[in-house]
Length: 207
Length: 254
Picture 1 (cartoon, rainbow over the protein chains, first blue to last red):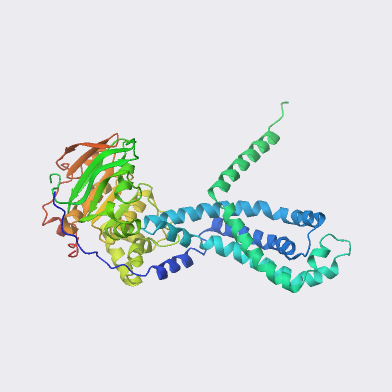
Picture 2 (spheres, chains in turn brown, purple):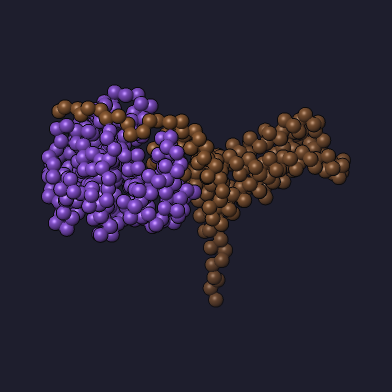
């Protein structure tokens, strides 16, 4: 069999970066109400979690009682954080698949599809760290000398400056982990168990 | 109607995957320029694996793959990806569009990634949307499209860069009979007018009947090669007249 003469390409290859950046930007706004709820949930959870995390990272020393206090402070934000991160990850994977179908390389597709996963938790975390950065002085004055957080919150300015970006990075990375397929499987399992537990509770009693 | 091409634009020889051949075994497929071929096989016969091997998503354990005169098996992964991106259009069975973009922007995306300006890319995407009779959806978001519209838009996206080879997995599966006929006619006419080698993977003999040649795939092996006449309901037009009848301009000289 004879191979046909190669035909030149229809279009030359070009720098794809401007288009990928344009896509990165286009993926940011929420599409519908569910999307809006999901993004708000992740951003606000990260803003809330940034407070104990930044305090923990800035603290010169972290005795057990302070650590437990910070963990207790963080607990209310954990369910909405996970609840928002799971669909965020599912959307990211769908976007990456659609990009690959448009003949974008796997790595470029993954990098382009993470826009929401970076921006929303990042934005929330920045708001949280700025708030605690600004308010830790007045808070320290309000707290009694015996309060477990008192020692942690009176860290030096340098420590606050270092802790703030570290907290933002940690929260973005943790959101990425929570949005993974493995985390989604765990979330589904927990939800199923909770539903089963709820049904048992609500089951009508025999007369 | 065409016999198996002896001057193929896409030529897979002895593809085996994995090494024990449990999915693909010594599979051959040759498709000539301007030929529209259906690969017919039951579920689990290896259609998806063959499609993945032909479009570079799966690396076969052995065998050779030639496209447009280039030995893809001898290229590095990056070079191969470049060839696939520039010269292949792929319609996966589970096709997806980006809901954040409009239908026209989705179709224009491969052009924009190739460096074509936004306005020109959208203009060209609209031509393809018109060909598939979904131009009314051009400005709509791709979210919430019905499957038939989504499939035709994905076909338009696969064709917008004027590929040398089009690989389509079940392209007519969600379409109503009349739309399926029209879409098959468009695919055949694109093969003729643009010289694109069209390969359609299907498990429906009815779908395969729309195309000029059927390659049967069973247990990962291409066996009988049959040349089927086109169905009476969808007469194949003469090479010269078909693009004009469908309003399709001849493809650019490549």
